[in-house]
Amino acid sequence: MIKEESVEKIIDESQQGSALAIENNAKNTRKLYIESYGCQMNFSDSEIVASILAKEGFNTTQILEDADLVLVNTCSIREKAEQTVRKRLEKFNAVKKTNPSMKVGVLGCMAERLKSKFLEEEKIVDMVVGPDAYKDLPNLIQEIDEGRNAVNVILSKDETYGDVAPVRLNTNGVSAFVSITRGCDNMCTFCVVPFTRGRERSRDPQSIIAEVNDLWERGFKEITLLGQNVDSYLWYGGGLKKDYEKASDMQKATSVNFAKLLELVAEAQPKMRIRFSTSNPQDMTLDVIESMAKYDNICKYIHLPVQSGSNRILKAMNRLHTREEYFELIDNIKKIIPDCAISQDMITGFPTETEEDHQDTLSLMEYVKYDFGFMFAYSERPGTLAERKMEDDVPEATKKRRLTEIINIQQKHSLYRTQEHVGKVEEVLIEGASKRSDTHWMGRNSQNTVVIFPKENYKVGEFVNVKINECTSATLLGEAVGYSKNN
Ligand code: SAH
Ligand code: F3S
Image (cartoon, rainbow, N blue to C red):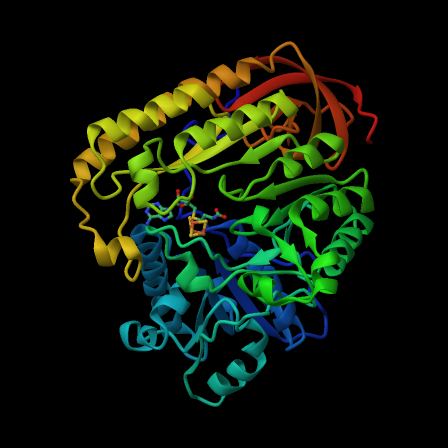
């Protein structure tokens, strides 16, 4: 049997890759090596950074030793993510010994969290740039070229990079990210993101649609609309989400929410597959689910993190919904879109979590039977409310044991869900060759499950109907029965 992905599907924070642009500009003479860690937003931001730097004479390279400028786009979500970056900086330091003119810049959430302290803590670093300051990179690079250190970690109330056309990095030419909101106002007590990415703001729908149209023209077949909290998207002419109440009646009357944005995008490109991430249960409304049901090209998949099944823990996490409200949302999704896939994020060992709370998480999982999930042991983050007000009192061994238990139950549910596909014919968008077999394609169905099937004469980027014959807990195996109507 061919197995395409690890069964746990835990996000591996060490996943990283030196990114290469599809097209480099022959006139550019300097070399940029850029590496990204953490969430999809970081990978998308690196494409904005590469675009800004392409205008400054930089082409991307995948060879670290050749780089004039090394940028690392960092993640602060858990301590381990930060440790991974620090290890990479050691490697860059070793390379710098053979290439002394090489400059090193730190971007993203760690840059924002540590600010100029980074320069003291890590001598290798020349430049520290927060997530809202990438347009200042040309000036900052001039500073470091002249031998000074450079720092810009100012958070913005309106920067969305809506006017920057991203350079697509390491792309399969089939799927692309399109960011629609930045920042987060939710203030979950465990989470560092509101501090590192600032307050929530939405991007102009016109610029989103223009980007989607451009991607279609260039042959892309699938987009993922990205935001920390996409259901909270609200365009009323610009500005922070929290200032919406101050908007004029005219602005309010013409505002665009997430359900409306989904429809605008789905109609702009009726053959483009549309995905989105991440949905916060407290902000997901029925009209979003109804918009999904209305358009064939919006994929039937919702990433709906819950973090815990215990009402007491949800409250302590400042997740503004109960377990019962979450069940109601799940029931509504399944009622409106019966074959919709749902995935989770879970945290084990949040402060004060008891065995009973943990059992509540297990029983919630039993109710939902998620298609897949991303599960983590609680990691205390400096500056968060949980760090300031609560003791990290669940022993590491207990966190890990509970984590193993939820991973095991998820694996069982993943298999239960993949088995539901066996015997069906499903539309698959081909993304590339299977990692395990040269003679097979790998693609995904609407529910985001990986499908492997013999290549025959099909090509990357084509929509194919595949008869599903077998499955593992993470992968469907089948054979093509022809092109789908969308091809
Ligand atoms: N809304 C965001 C969530 C970002 S963090 C999004 O777009 O994905 C992704 C996941 O990391 C969270 O859902 C949570 O499960 C986990 N996480 C966040 N902070 C954490 C912490 N301090 N310890 C462990 N896991 C954490
Ligand atoms: Fe973090 Fe909660 Fe926002 S997990 S990104 S504060 S929705």
